[in-house]
Image (cartoon, rainbow, N blue to C red):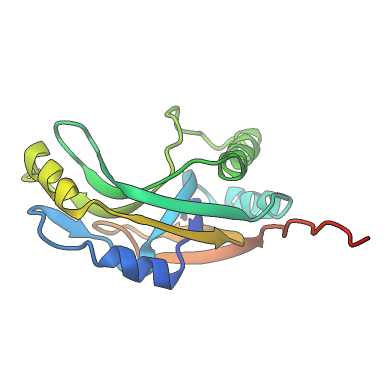
Length: 185
């Protein structure tokens, strides 16, 4: 039974820049650079038949390429941080791509999480010894900076049981559409 999710891949050059932030945070399990991604929709553990249906349905998604801006760092988990991540600024193309996939998955009967979508790139998962103060200090020292790239495809990933993130396997890739250039007159 595969565990599936859809995501935008993070280009290697962006991943390498983000990887320079690693270290200095007790209790952090750092995600391998090659496993950085921006999750669009978590599908979960499903049977092979539904997995085929999902892969086929995603092939019908027609959306434009997505400009991505990574801006700063943050943590999920409040007073008991669970992970640190690079923030991805929401934009209409990204949010619509995610919403279209979620609607499609619902129609196929895939249970969808009932929390607001927050685009991000997970950098590390935190163990219990990571405190809010240590995490806040780490975030303040790193700052994060701003990076950008264009996502030209989204992928259907599978994952195997592991500690932390990955390894992730690209099961299918779906090209996003180039914006049409204005006609020359």
